[in-house]
Image 1 (cartoon, rainbow, N blue to C red):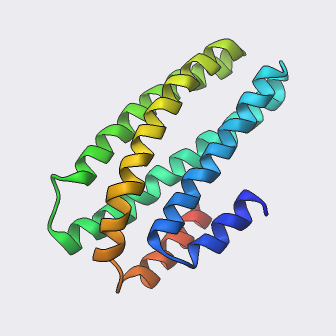
Image 2: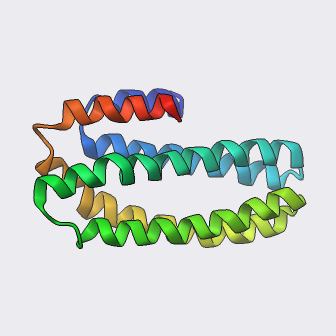
Length: 159
């Protein structure tokens, strides 16, 4: 099953499944970038990079613009886990900027080096989201999940 098909199937299940599937889809996108970089195929590397970067930024947007505000409204927690996650998202965006510059220069080695940094940030971040935030959000937003999922699907189409 393709990453897109897995994401679509998981989106019907639960908030945890939806966002965890999105994480795995982004991970697969990075693997494509690495494979092209390792093969020295700079045009393919740049193409896969654009797809990966777009997917990751879309994921961050879905969280920051839709899920986090819904969670905060449902729980009243505005300076808790979502604040930490937003801060980590900003760190990731900083690394993405450096990685984009490496792609523009055709510097596969620098892209992979920066990618190692991003990967560490992402893995630590995803563990927190998948282990703590997503289950909390799923409980808090259970009644609102069908409506939120519809908004997430629309966001996906708009970006």
